[in-house]
Length: 320
Image 1: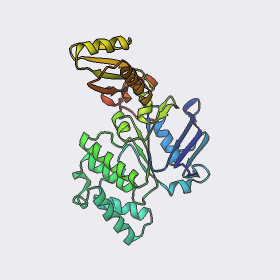
Image 2 (image 1 turned 120 degrees about the horizontal axis):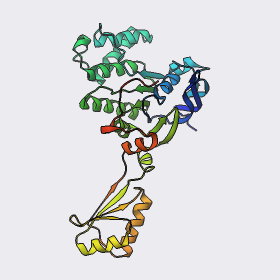
Image 3 (image 1 turned 45 degrees about the vertical axis):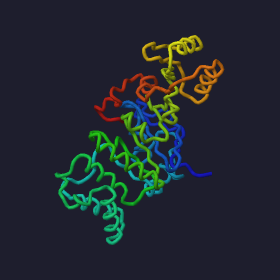
Image 4 (image 1 turned 180 degrees about the horizontal axis):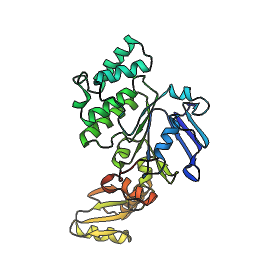
């Protein structure tokens, strides 16, 4: 069997009487994106800090490609990269100088380091600004440079802690495209985010943290099916067919003006098939059908009791 890129078992972290992580279990497959989603104080950044060997767990185990973060921290550090919540670039240097400095710190050697820096500048669309001072860089450019520095040694696992906080929509989507490209090449990404749109767009798996526990985990679609509110919207060509369908589905809601019927559903294939089978048996023809499932805002509210207005949780403060 393939070794998971990340494996957490019974992970706990506490500071005196304050429990930050309370027994987390999580498995992340190689070459995928997993998002840790949760309100401030849920334990997202603490999890990343333990996985990147910056913190020791109070109990439990954390493995990265089979390396134990406590017993073999050097093994873990050799396969990971970390981009924190705030930019770690040196404002007194140019973009190229920042990358060259990182290459020297990672002992790449002059020739190999220079080649890798050139490659990264092109990959992150920073070649034209490579020798310009960082004061001229936009927030999106600084964030791309920050991620490029993480990738100097091509790590197998990358931790992205709130990677697009403060970025404008265009810069945010540029970062998303970069992450997708990394994963397409086999890199594993674990990201923490409070941006629900980001989790929905990028993650193969989402783990929702609340109060130091994982309260739900699954694909975005699986999580959306956990909460009520899903429905099928059926549109018919005439009022008579709408009347017949309305009688067939007693718990439905009708829109006479639009000749539409809303039928509660979890959005799953089985529920859709059941509705279509009942319509077929009654010989009722549907002009149009659409599936509507709850979004991650609904999931977030249902699981954590915290509203996420406009697809994003309040970002004041830092997650422990």
